[in-house]
Amino acid sequence: NQARQKQQLKHQEKSQATSIFSGQNGAPRQVAIVPLSDNIDTSNVIRSLNESVDVSDDVSVDRQIRVRVDRFKQNVTYIPARYDLLHALDVCRVADFVVLVLPTDVEVAEEGEILLRSIESQGISNVLVVAQGLDQLNPPKKRPQVISSLKSYINHFFPTIEKVLSLDSRQESSNVVRSLCTATPKGIRWRDDRSWMLIQDVNWPEIQGDTIDGVVVTGVVRGKGLKADRIVHIPGWG
Image (cartoon, rainbow, N blue to C red):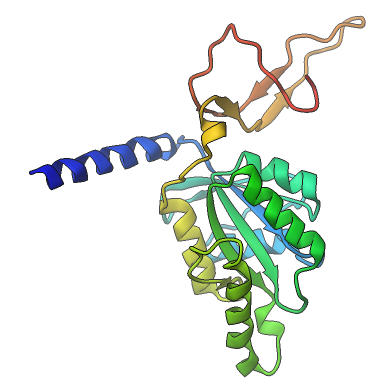
């Protein structure tokens, strides 16, 4: 009986954690795409993930990409990060999931290692690891060895990672999307103890004189409830 109560409580907690994502108009699952080398093409990463689940939306490397994944009945927002420490930290700060993209033709440089350690220290939610360019390696028998080496490398930072998935495989890309759409984000404590929001749109009013007021920012409030009479901080603006 006690075991059943624990199971019911666990199920209830999971349902509450994922209820915000439910339905056609549910909040999107926010996914950071973080390259660990300067030759990683993040737009191709997102394109591979989309095509694996038959999504054909346009992909741009410099903006958020929101898609509807009908196969799993979920909305997903991909947020591509640049190969830049501060930008990657900002992107990971608002992510439910972080997809780390490893190169297969070069080793991760010191900059990539610093980036990894920094986002880990900042606090990170669910992590998935993928490899780009595996099919370009020759001879083909070398590829499993490269994947094994990449897994060994990433386990120094995230010991719980069980597999490095190849974006060149439609099946493995689909498995990545499945994880993004079905897993429960574990969150980040310092973030979820307050209200926070990823801004999806900004509407500026018509400027009259020197004063600008009434700017409208749109997004889904996450974490704690947002009180309308509290001061809100928008990074970079005040």
